[in-house]
Amino acid sequence: MKNKTLRVVLLGFTAILLVVCSFGGGFVAGHFLPTSALSTQIATTNADQGGTPSDLKSLFIPFWEAWNIVHQEYVDQPVNDTTLMEGAISGMLQSLGDPHSTYMNPQEFTDATSQLAGSYAGIGALVDTNGQLLTITKPFPDSPAEKAGLQAGDQVIALDSQDVTSLLPEAVRQKVLGPEGTTVTLTIQRPGQEAPFDVEITRAIIVVPSVTSKMLENKIAYVQISTFGDSTAKDLHKQLADLMAQKPKALILDLRNNGGGYLDTGVQVASEFISSGVIVSEKAGDGNRKPYKVIKGGLATRQSLPMIVLVNGYSASASEIVAGALQDTGRAKLLGETTYGKGTVQNWVPLSDNQGAVRVTIARWLTPNGNTIDKKGLTPDIVVKMTADDVNANLDPQLDAAVKQLSNP
Image 1 (cartoon, one colour):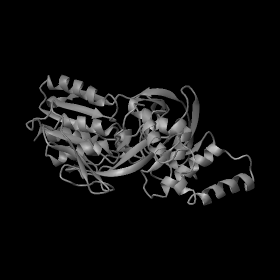
Image 2: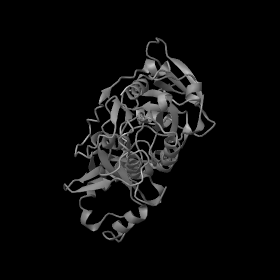
Image 3: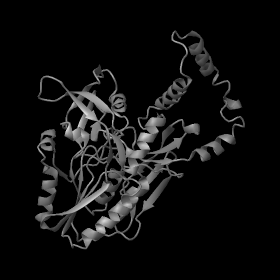
């Protein structure tokens, strides 16, 4: 991880990659605070780092009483102190009542941050963890998931013959993860099919480029961004240069199924299409606002180049920041379905001794017109639905509608 503030706009709903992450817990808008900075902050208030600060000792008496009771009375001994510690931190953050302020254990933190690097270990599928069961939303092309025959809408009801219907979908997702070359057997419940069936999949390293592009019919340039990671802005600039050299008549930016990533990357991406003004603003709890302005030098900023942005319910955080900026400024129309609605900013703070990290909401973000999309999402200018049947039949009515719209302005 980079030793810097991680401004992530990443996991906001819950469908990301079964290659390593799920789309939830933060699609993220946040910052990464280095452990050293946190340690310095703690040291100013607590000379005995790791101990209870003197002014909080009386407050924490019940905690240590409970800790001792568990160690002395619990039936199955010895208890795992690390598990107890992680549970205590998790419970503290859950008590805030904010789904995006959470504790990430070491493995979850590694999974969440490695997504931004663009490679993953797993089966290669987008999943949704918002419902009662872990649900496949899209297998990646040529991935182990696709080769095994998984389809959009498939639900996981057992894992290696163990029933998982009583577990949270996120917990099931974690169990699907594993080292490259190992196998996992998923029992699948498929809509329209009465009997469940087993699928054995060998996990693999899956590399997912964050930016892909091509020229479509009628000289329409197409750019798809899957995440806002380390190399996204650089890759986008290079691919846009190649596309612009071909003198396109219109442009499609596909942000569907994109859970976000670095906030700074989102600002850089939006700046490729907007010539001036504010991309997004952060609004802190005290009401103060911090604007993020356009970075000059964008390659596709001219208004005479018609543009459509494709979005859906899995477009979140950084995706919504970019889409919201393009919609508010009139640079592009949104086509597809209402976005996820992740409108908050988190600090991601790694804990000492590689004990995971906490993420805590520190602000809300606003579109250029001052609108918040939290829990509401962005409403497309042109609503076009896409069903699981469309996906399984390799149909894309949203992309088709965008091409038609730009071909006949």
